[in-house]
Image (cartoon, rainbow, N blue to C red; front, side, top):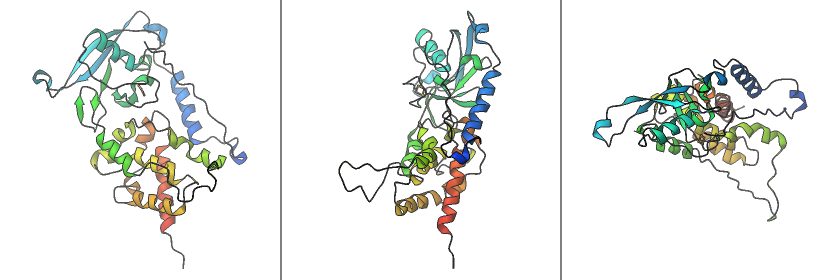
Length: 290
Ligand code: FES
């Protein structure tokens, strides 16, 4: 089983002295998360020696007998610290080697094992089985085309991510070869959370707007644009270019602030807040004073 435990939640203090004492949205969210963890429905020790019942979505368009989607039941021996990913890996390794899903790092870093678990987008390797009601229902991410079992087609998601030109652009490079491009501490703080995205597509999958508008850039891509548009090391001209991409019909203005993306983000990125901030930036760019 994985040695992956719940991520230690470290919250850095705000750097701005004026902010000290006040809780940032991020700190509030982490506090809520800790409170939720304290109210876990099941004590892990209650599950020791038991089996966990998981129901896993199955579908394989290439095998005639498996073209009709269904759920398979597996009973997995519980071990302390068991995650959803551990459970499906056990089922694959011991009961059905054709069970297909993506995973890699097992440490909530690569973003490849986002599933729809008990009706919510979650990372398999970051979700403790003991936190979930049984049977644990494991499905592929909604609103994405299923390739096989828990594997969805990520092409569209990656296209949207690349549409915002997610790389640093700078016209005026420092004069000396060894000179650094400095970023202030305050600016680093501002973009810090946006850099945590692991491209898992949980946010996109949870978004009603993205589900109904295939061209909507989506929360992850807009957050990626935020990461660069708010970086003080990029020129104003480049920032304007970024805002033009974001202002388009299927950009930031499609967001209806439902917060579903923010709710499911496994990295606690304040996605909706970033989208709102970019809306304000776009308005400011277009303001004219006579
Ligand atoms: Fe990499 Fe879960 S396996 S995020």
